[in-house]
Every structure is written in C-alpha cells, then in structure tokens.
Length: 416
Ligand SMILES: NC(=O)C1=CN([C@@H]2O[C@H](COP(=O)(O)OP(=O)(O)OC[C@H]3O[C@@H](n4cnc5c(N)ncnc54)[C@H](O)[C@@H]3O)[C@@H](O)[C@H]2O)C=CC1
Ligand SMILES: O=C(O)CCC(=O)C(=O)O
Picture 1 (cartoon, rainbow, N blue to C red):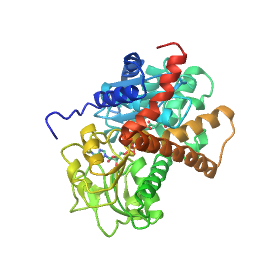
Picture 2: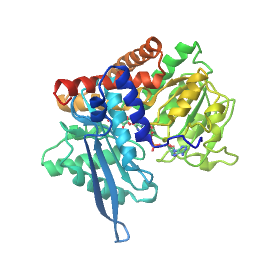
Picture 3: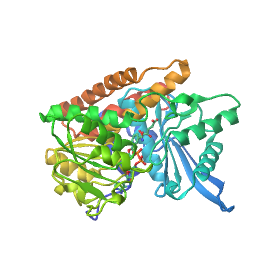
C-alpha cells in the first residue's frame, strides 16, 4: 500500500461524491448536504450473557438522505464496525437506491460484536436490544433495516418481533430479509448473488468473453459469495478459487463447489477444513477471468492492484477496492462493475419484499427474479453509458447515476 493511500472508506466515498456532483453541475452546497448522513445514532446495548454477566455493546444506525423516501439498508454484526464505516455504508445505500431507481434513501446499521463467539440466545438478546435502542428512529415508513455481514433471516425475525411488540401491531414491513413464513420474499436470500451473476453476464458481453468455462475467483463464502459460487458453477463457469476469513482454496481445474457448499458453516467458513490453503490475499492475485470480492472493505489496494490478473472485477462486497487501485486497474483495461451497482440485488429484492408486505400479496420466485433482472440490466446500461459517453471510470459513472435522484429530490424539497 502506498504511504498516501486513504483507507478511510467515508473519506474515499466523499471524494467520489464530490467529483460526481461537480461533473453533474451541482454546487458545493449540494456536496455539503450529501457528504455525511443526515442522522447517526450511537447506542449502547446491555446484554445479559449466558454466564450471568452483563456486556454492553456499541451499535450505530446512520440515515444518509431521506429526500426520496424512507431510508433503507442492512445491519452488520462485526468486531471491526466503526462509525465512519457505517456512515459510508449508508451513503453507498443511497447510491444503490438511486441507481436502481427505488423510492428510498440510504441507511445502514452496525454493532461491534463477534457473533461467532456468541450463543444463539445471546444473539437474540443483542438483536432485540438493538431494536429497542433504535426504535424511535426506524419503521416501515422511516427506515427499514435488512441483513448484511454476519446477520441473517433469524436475526431479522427477532428484530421484527421486537419491533412489532413495541408498536403493538404486526409490522412485517419494518425489516426485510425475513424468513418466508414471516413475510419474507422469495429470492431475497439469493438476491445479492443473483444480481452479481446478472452483472457478470453483462460485463462478459462487453468483453466478448463466453461464460462457459470462464475462470472465476470469489473472495468470501458467506451469503453473497457462496450462492454466487453455486450460480456460476451451475451456469457452466469454472470456479477456480474461493476464500473466507481463514484462508483460500485454489484449483485451476475447478473446485468441487457442491462439496464446499455442503461443508460451509453458518458464517461462511470452510477453508479451515483443508490443508495447503493459500492466504485470502494470495487468492486475489491468481490467474482468472473474473474476480469477485465478496467479503469486506479495502481488499484490493495499491499494494496488490498491479498483480491482479482478472480482466473483469465485479464487486459483490461494499467498498472492496480503494480509489488508487480503481485507477490502476482501470488504466490496465480491467472492467470494474462497482459495488453500488453490482451488489444492489439485495436491496432491490428487499424493496420487493417491502412492497409485498405493504400490499399483503406475495410473488413467486420466478416473478421476483424477472423483476430483478429488468432493474439490474437497466442499471448496468445506464452506468455503462455514462462511463463511455463521459469518459469516466465505472465507479464515478455509477456515482453520477446514483447521486442524481437524491440531489434533485433534495432541491425540489427546498433543502438546497
Ligand atoms: N447479504 C447481503 O444481502 C448483502 C451483502 N453485501 C456485501 O457483501 C459482502 C459480504 O456479505 P455477506 O455475504 O452477507 O456476509 P457473510 O457474513 O455472510 O459472509 C462474509 C464472508 O466473508 C468472509 N471474510 C470475512 N473477512 C474476510 C477476509 N478478510 N478475507 C476473506 N474473506 C473474509 C467470511 O469468512 C465469510 O465467508 C459485504 O461487503 C456486504 O456488505 C452487499 C449487498 C447485500
Ligand atoms: O437489503 C437491503 O435493504 C440492504 C442490503 C445492504 O445492506 C447492502 O446492499 O449493502
């Protein structure tokens, strides 16, 4: 990594927002409004642990901009959560909603904790405590949470139940990513990965590479990464590398994806069952056609960008590539499908879930997939079009498309 490289994801996203607004002709007042969330709540959540002691956890909920509509975005449980990270994640949610033309602004939450070291009941108490702490700020017409790193449909179910108890009426539209029996949508669990497969298809078409036998490496084997491996394998691509927090597996002839899916734990860990693994950094530099970071931020930096051999990078993770690395890779001719476009499948199907909850009428998985495909293919073309006609990299193009709706909505409301 160069000495000057900025790994603060909030500052990096502010740099691109500023540039996007300038290119669209907005004044610096608009940047002042959009560079930070409108609201950030920090909460302290006391939880009675199984040993009888009380542990107090810190959590956040950031609401970036609600000019377009209620804010929307996941909740992450991770030991590395910081306030700046949650703020950046809420801005990225605004951009995803803008690119996908959803009637939302961006929100995001996080709790500093390690669910891998907590029991089922401790996790339940933490999830319910978080909802009690943020309940004034959230709601089906205010701010709608969803799953993200190390949270899942069970956690969404506890959160929905707690919110419904507080409000004293059933509130399925308060949260998305719920189990199907509690008003979850078909296709939400696989939506992020489905969206990434659609973006891989589009990127392959632009590069004239056939999907059949295309070599894919995926960093992260959780919700996003493992379903993506499954879909790529089923579509006839060759998944030659996967990784998780412990390490990486690599086989140029293709990995046994079905076996790996069967053996993975509920936090997306599997490589610890094997000897002779690579590190999760080394896997990024192996020869392949498509590289999909699907884990955490700042994985592709100026330190390794030069050694990356993929010709297509599709960012399933939020914020996996630094701005310096984006420039190096773009200069090398790598086609990057940026996070705010590539990983929007999750929030798009969350929107469908919320719509189904509001109308009380539910769609089949085929209907959900067909609607997802329409939205994401249109988003790709919009971003690619700005990239080619304005001569800007794909990340800046995506920000230019994503920021416009909230900027206009803020202007019409008279905020600027
Ligand atoms: N779950 C969702 O609906 C969405 C997730 N995303 C993003 O996708 C990324 C992954 O999220 P999920 O799959 O939901 O999380 P998850 O918690 O289900 O899985 C995370 C995976 O990353 C691995 N991991 C963690 N640290 C790592 C490291 N340093 N190197 C390699 N692997 C590492 C874990 O072992 C696990 O396999 C995150 O950036 C998240 O924000 C984006 C949009 C929606
Ligand atoms: O499904 C949602 O509402 C949000 C998903 C999310 O947190 C993300 O796209 O990063």
